Image 1 (cartoon, rainbow, N blue to C red):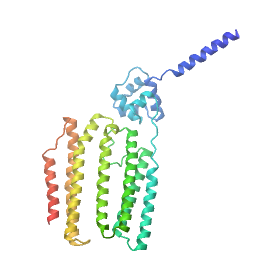
Image 2: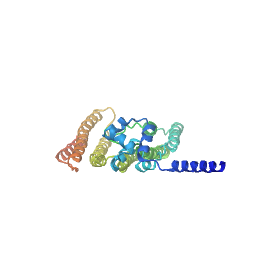
Image 3: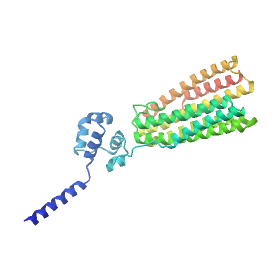
Length: 340
């Protein structure tokens, strides 16, 4: 009898183990991840634009959501579709340590430039200001912001972010981490070259200063645009939002190019005419800059809105008469600023 009881008990344990290994149903996975994140059925239903009863039916395995809805559900949980289906949590995104080390190295480089520049008499106010702006206000500020956004999941301060758009939170964090490393490397390299050039560049220091600052601004802008554009398919959940964002990049690139052309023309005018700070000519240049920004930003925001509207209504977008009229206005302001 004892032996039979042991056999029965052993069979019961084996059956229990088999039951534990049985794959978890889709509904149970959904309920588990929802409860882990403190989301109610009503809250999830609101995010998915469905009824609470629909969510309840999914969790009880009475009905199944379609593939598109599954992607939305996974995004609400900060997971990819594969991770959700496999029942595995997405690994927590942790900011790499390299940007922190590079920020410290940038600070040390700036300090050494001040010391060596003071001792050798080659301390340039313009070079020092550029190093501080790049190292502190660009590199360090962006690193602190990206780190905070990845840690808290709050992306409201990001350019182009909209609370009405559904994002894959995990992918957004990955892109921010990649951008942080890229910006840190570029900023540290530029600050180092500015310091070395300022101390040993002799007569070529001014030319090196201008070239480095221009190259840094151009590379930083291009990198941010490229990272954003290439990640749209991963960071945005809805296909319509992806298409609208890609379409809107036409006006984004236009605006960036217009700004760089205007700044280039402004610096060329200052250099050719030898305009000094706080002079009437410099104040006039600021007036032209204000007028340019008003026209360019009005064109930019109008085309962004028009692009989204066209994609929503027809699925296509092409620059219209307003785009070319805005381009002509911006070009005219730039030409007038340069020649008058």
